[in-house]
Image 1 (cartoon, protein in one colour):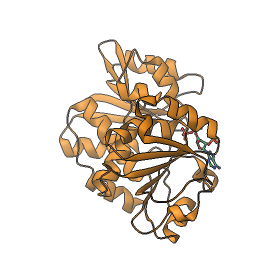
Image 2: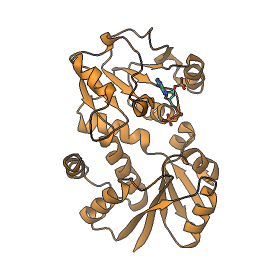
Image 3: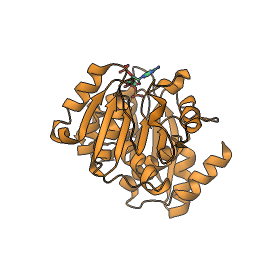
Length: 270
Ligand code: ATR
């Protein structure tokens, strides 16, 4: 069977093998998918070994998404825009880099949460790699406006400058200066890892607002608790994880698995 893996460090807790095994079963695809721990200074050597061993592709997770973009011999436009790669396709000597994180986020919001983004106002918290990866896929949905708010304003300004072609729909802000009236608020900061919340006014949350944290864990994040306590509907990043995997599976196998059942199973497993 065709072999794939997810490369990261650490990697022991990755849910990707479970997700891809379920997709393979569901679609009747004959493939094997495992975890691959790469040394922090050994990402490239690891990829070369996988290629030599005949692997067909790999997912890439922390901390190697930038290394993967550098290593790829060809980049999909959305990976180019993201500046990062989470999916590699090994294709007759080529190492093609793509990024399905942003499309996974959009699929989770639009399909799973049932919130179309066309004409909507989106607040994107953060301006690091996760926010950058989300920007082009979000813009592709034709929202009315995206406000990028970040702790370090200059980083948000640099990010917006890289998407100057969309300047009419992009605004930059500090957390405290954000003004309400959003349909969707996306936490793309890593603040939740430190049980921290980007200090935006609580008025940005309220009934009718979808607040999504890209992070996930056994318990809701502090961001989700805060948003929910002010009336917002909340989602964690598990749906995004399942959807980015489905998009990667599509790239490799030409068929997009149905994600609903897998997401429900993972949700139950906790
Ligand atoms: P990632 O790949 O997860 O996006 P990153 O590129 O290091 O990681 O970016 C981290 C993001 O989380 C940045 O936007 C960072 O803000 P700064 O640009 O000001 O550093 C944000 N961030 C990290 N910790 C945070 C915290 N405790 N509160 C608010 N924002 C935080």
